[in-house]
Amino acid sequence: MPDLLERTVPRYTSYPTAPNFSSSINADVYGSWLAELPDRSTVSIYLHVPYCRDLCLYCGCNTKATHRIKPIEAYAQLIVEEIGLVAHRTGRRKVTHVHWGGGTPSILGAELLKCVAGELARRFDLSAIHEHAIELDPRYVTPAIARASKDIGVNRVSFGVQDFSPDVQQAVGRIQPFGLVRDAVAMLREFGIDNVNLDLMYGLPRQTASGLKQTAILAHELQPQRIAVFGYAHVPWMRPQQRLINDAELPSSRARMAQAAAVHATFVQLGYEPIGLDHYVQPGDAMAVAADTGRLRRNFQGYTIDNADALIGFGASSISRLPMGFAQNAVNVAQYSRAVAAGKLATVKGVAVSIDDKIRGEIIERLMCELAVDLSTISQIVGVEVDCNFSDAIASLEPLKNDGSVRIDGQRIRITEKGRPLARVIASAFDSYLMAGRARHSLAV
Image: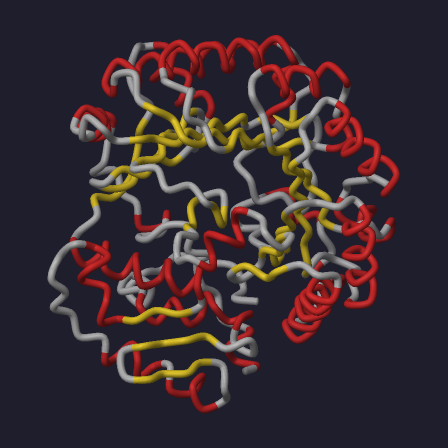
């Protein structure tokens, strides 16, 4: 187990994962993929706003800090223009899910949120939306933002909490007392947005298992429908602000494992249902139902009940998933801006998925979502005859089978409760790119 805790593996929000994208997938390829979507295809939409007022030290998102309104206004106009560029190729598609991420999407302000949402409504059919979610910073929730969110159809809000300990908040540069978060949640509910998600983290500087247990208890007081508990990814080679974190204050791999276990036990005791690797939901929540019926999915926002035929991303760095493959916009805002301003799609890289990719992607997704997979049924799921030999992958899981983390019965693989924290490691056994690649990933636990 100790060696496994030190392994670095992808988070598997896609397969192939983003480090395997290449420039062979450009704007022309993505444009053709959009135009080739079958007539009755449904889509979900992700809108990325890469701005915050200030950067938190732990942040691994594609975002930058600004206190100026002009770049925000310019960016909102670019999103509007990109929506038109995409809709020109797809036609007026039926949308099932919308998700605003970042960054801090509410930095757009009430009027710009309405402007972008209005263009979406003009270009796409939003009449069948199941979930319209937005990520908000509880420090900057105002009545105007709450009202605008409700007006544009938002029915779920995710709040970044991370940890309620003042000492930890000071270490990561994000001060938000429990009372502030409680008031932000109450304000959203006053405006009729009842579905609240909370995001917590373990593995942050100065965190302890006992402190995280207290954070979990406080989070429960807010009565969220869903809670995500992510392991902090310390990747200072990718995120320069993380270099300001004192490495000596980061917990060891064993301490991270203890923290994750403490949070898990606390939420289970409080009555939440564990979902996949790192989510907890109220009994009866749609995500719990999806998990029980094999319909839970995983995408770039984590676990989801989104079953749309395609995911279309708008904004700098956003990634789209279509039946043909994945396509990512330019991460750099200036590069993204130049493309859209010139009337072009901003795609700079991606990957076309092969039959083998689809098969392995389905196996990995089932392991991440259901903690189990029957390799003999993959042919039925992906719709092609599977002629793959997974004996090497199964053999590589033998040590985890011996320690009780995995049970293997012929072609059926099941991750036990003991092995739940190692789901990413277990799924990685089926990743044909991982051993050949050189990408650096976050710790497995």
